[in-house]
Image 1: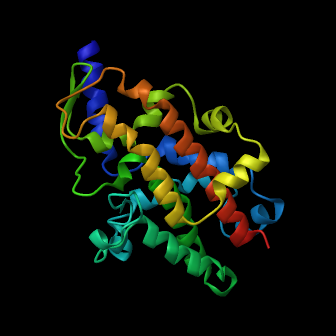
Image 2: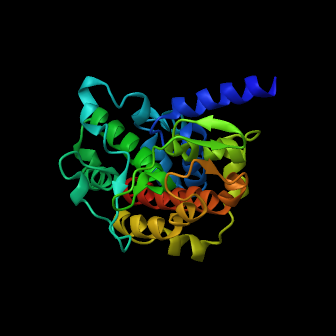
Length: 258
């Protein structure tokens, strides 16, 4: 029975593909952000969406290959250089998560001039790509590929990338997004403001600095991962989900809180 369950779970991980954080992680980022949206922000967003934005948490993943938005397929990741600074050069032709958020910033600064459908699309991009850019395996280090197969706790997996995408489910399998958000949202106002400062380019550097640790505990192309990998990753995953939520809240309030 245990073998059957593990095999089913391996298939589930494979199904995540390049969906950063999976559905639960993306919903958690939004749930944290929703703790800090102003009344005005909620009111303005409600003109386009139901208030609970979690419903569209993985819309960009589910529709990434639709003909109309197929150009966004490669926008879910980004690259950094050897000093962990954002590096657009490896992805200039296809774009990346930072490029996507720069487009969103340009559009949503003047959202009242856009069509309703354009506002909806840009909000979907915002809530998704802020989450994506904080996922450890969506920060690509120089010359590094993270889709190697491996074994963990005696079970074979086809992709290190999808393993980390599913990390929120591994860490909090019995909790929903709102419960996880309440658990990890542990900062006072001053610290939240400090975390939320800056731009996606700044956050890319902060993310790469932090998540480099996962490649210390999981050497590139390791065939067997440490049995404690999930638990050793708890702090980083927690901080990345939390910080993404604070930063998303700041952006939503900036665009819609006026």
